[in-house]
Image 1 (cartoon, rainbow, N blue to C red):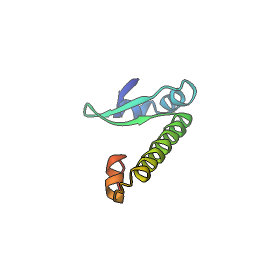
Image 2: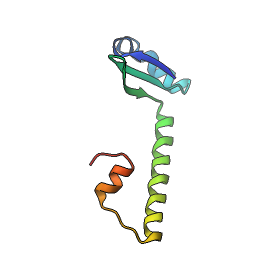
Image 3: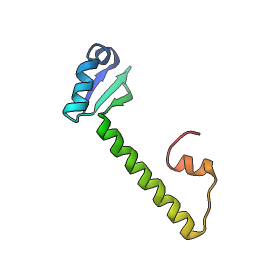
Length: 83
């Protein structure tokens, strides 16, 4: 995965979008040497969303099968989303 600092990413934004869209590359954006964002193509994004849906569905199935219920906050924490 290619990485760029924020200033370079701003200057090369069109190039970054083309890399993500056409070459299917992911580009890491850093700010003060800390990773802060990743630019990915829309197809990659849709695949990640689908994987999240599958994971969340399996988590729900497991919960129902075991009779163990969790609060919304517990589930959100486990799947790493903020409410």
